[in-house]
Length: 140
Length: 111
Image 1 (cartoon, each protein chain N blue to C red):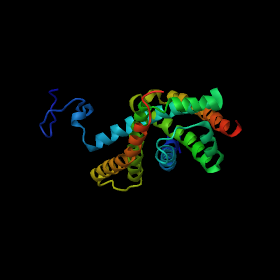
Image 2: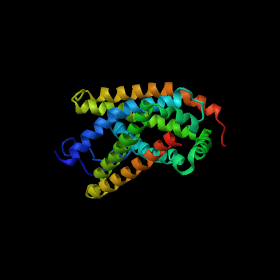
Image 3: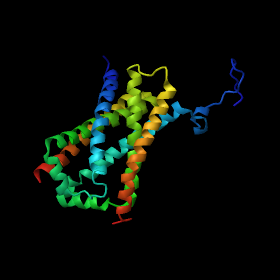
Image 4: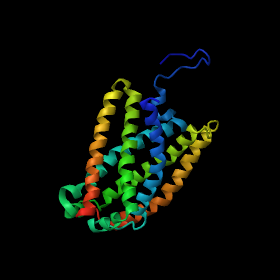
């Protein structure tokens, strides 16, 4: 602490930008994009492992693998994946538009547009996950 | 153009394609019949369609490229010196994953 910015005469927070308390819309977009991206990448590798059960166990191996994952806990995981994919995709479109020069003077509006569109898609899509959650047993 | 510039361009091209492919994939698997339990027989019927197979192959290849290149970008942000080595490791992971994943897609057509 104790460092002082000479122009504004306010104390400078070391690593203050790493505390979520001080995040603003842009930092939230960056952090959420990064966390969701890493999570989806890890999921993708696990997903390939789960689907390739057909290589290791044939048709029966695949069907029993899928049946074992038709349980409530996995639905929660799929829903979290849905949140990550939705935000990452919508925010990614914003990043590409920025690269093309769209909205570079209206960052704030871009952040909020992404949050609102993501929230709408998540709200509508979550209905299907609730139906799946209710239909599946806790464990198989 | 340097390699990293191509990586940057491909990251964006794959991003646009993945938005479409993931929406199709996720919509079919989760929203068409939300309470269905996946079986080999159903998946096999779906994968008989060339379009469906194209979507799955696209997801496998483009998704792995986009995801692993994204991991590489994160590594470059925090540990730039390891960028090259990590890049090669991730390339290897990608090649193995595409190869092994292709075996699964092939199994649905041959079994």
